[in-house]
Length: 149
Image 1 (spheres, rainbow, N blue to C red):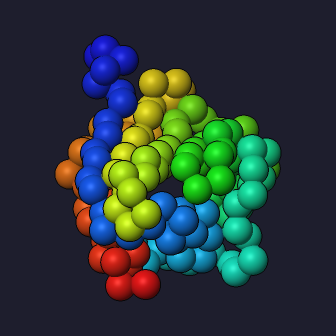
Image 2: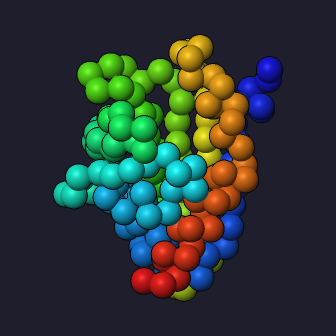
Image 3: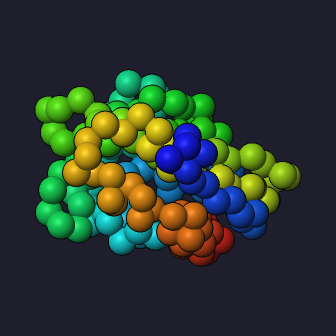
């Protein structure tokens, strides 16, 4: 398997300002509303991401918690995190959101799942199952939320 097979992404133009879209992504409590993988159940309020080094906790639909370690951040433009079981180092996969404003009311959003560095063999089947269409589903749901806000 090549590195290219381990990086999956999708993009879409959304009719909403970058700041509105970014707020939906950077507030973990809002993420289950638009998760196209149907993997996120809930997150406690008041965990809004502010920068690299932040950690937010999410409860998955199967009941397990994940600590998400923010590794890339530019307010309104970029956020990426590496999930891990509580108290453990991240096993090597990354979720990234990039926002490129086209104008004041339109933004191109790119969502990427990168499992190039994933080392946990038990997570590999799930990683392989995370396809561009699932990322596109998240973007489409995010667009519906952002365009309604």
